Length: 210
Image (cartoon, rainbow, N blue to C red):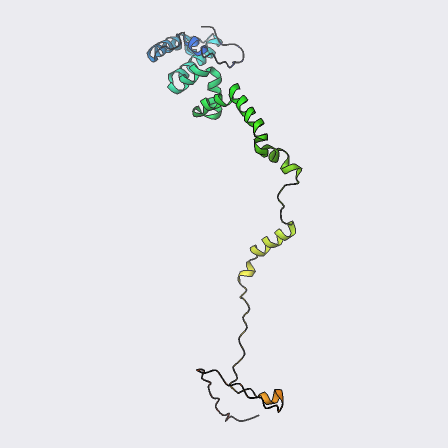
């Protein structure tokens, strides 16, 4: 096993981790564990104090074993290589397959075909990209002053303490209306009270006048 040098490059082959542990692709978990223990004892930093490269090799061995010992990560690595592992770290392990399906060239061609036959996805992209036809079709917003006044009125705490204005009805006068004083002496008759309505009689005033 050669030590890792330079920046790590991503690939879709899915072979470098197996090469790091020195096992063939598809090796059972028992073989992976044996190979890891053997290499870990060989390149452990405590056993190689004068070899700075041994520490880096030991880290690569641990990283390879942690990945291949996990069934989900190993499945992703076998299908998509180190690129799949990078996608899993960014979008989650459950979204790796969806990512590669959507980024497939045939899927891109399908989206392009639907884009063309539907006229820019029924003009949805035009509304989003060109701000509702360059602002001509943009919904109108209320005036800022009216909106601010409405907000201030709703937020005013003094308005909750103001009771609504109430006006009491005038007192009832049971004295019959003298139509002759209004119409003259034309012989107009007074309008009788409706049937079934009792009119209280006023008591004569006996108090002292001032």
